[in-house]
Image (cartoon, rainbow, N blue to C red; front, side, top):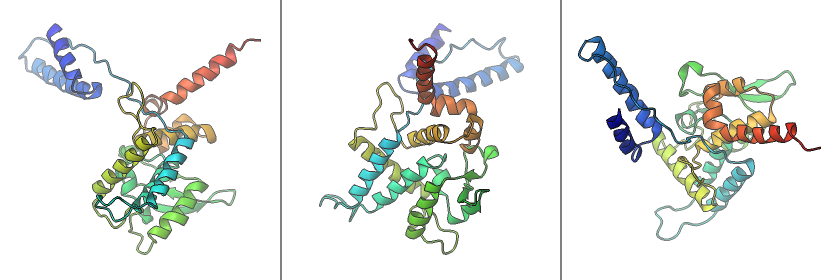
Length: 272
């Protein structure tokens, strides 16, 4: 066990806790199989893996507004003579992606970059208000895939920005960077631009955080806003977010819960 602890300490200098845990699980499976084959007497005791905090620190709505504003400003500027780009017009589209992510609980990968016009359905609620229902062709957890209801801001983004940029002519157009069929290339491009602007505004780095604030932090912001400004329960938010209640609170809304603990403490123990 001591040797295993020393080895894990070495691994921690290179890999994350979750990465090491995955290998630990694999090793335990191998040893259990060896026990079943009577090659060894018992499974050795493995030390516990202590993980660093890997929750996402959410952007605030105000910070997201700053990022989209900066993206739109840069979209109008001219690249330097050293740049291979003719212009920064695509930054305008990245700004729309940032807003899109804030108003949906989708992950910033295949869940958004594989979306096409055919994945949107215009519905009417009991108040006679029209809204779009979104059915992503890809969700990370397929057995939890469900249609996502959206709000009026999302409707404005889709109709007045996305549809104008890429009109729905065949129902098969991608809603973002339709002319680039390499969707992984699109994801890398958007991520790189977003991080660049977030750093430019001094919003990206977070002290004592392994993740800092990548695009996934907008997903956290989306969940927080959903809890603050709608009547959705945690179970409902987790359901349309294609995640579990436990993961929602641990990975995406940890900061939200800490804030609520402070508010609750002040309410209960308020000095009279």
